[in-house]
Length: 165
Image 1: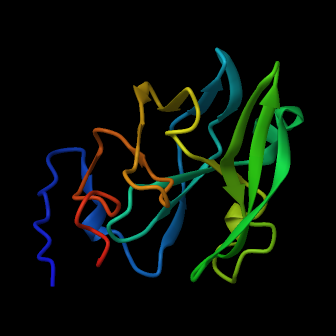
Image 2: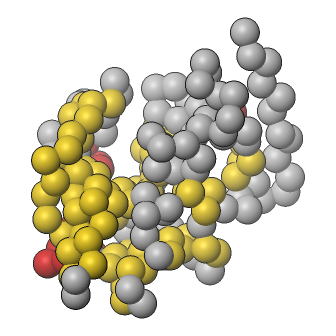
């Protein structure tokens, strides 16, 4: 069994190890921006974040605050044990295509209705992901969509050696 050494949060920080399981949804007051090809694809001060043990916060943007004309539904899908079935979105504009750069829950499970129809973007697939005035880094691993900023400490699921968490 792998022993996790939790990083102690400093002032103004949160540890992902203090996040609950099942995950909690809460509003985000900071401005969230997603940039692709030098253009704002999404911008909101009405995002929701999902917090789950060991994962960086996942930010969900309301569809009214997204340039949906640049996105099409993907054939890809997945299922979260907590939130339910997810559908994915592909970016297409000016000859550029980014497959599955975002996902959403059209019919989320009970307790997750506040993210219904909102899109979560992979920080590692867009050109820039911003939370407030800080550029976010992608959560490690191919399966996780959390945004890492200086406000959260890990270790984070998805880093090498975390497959058994």
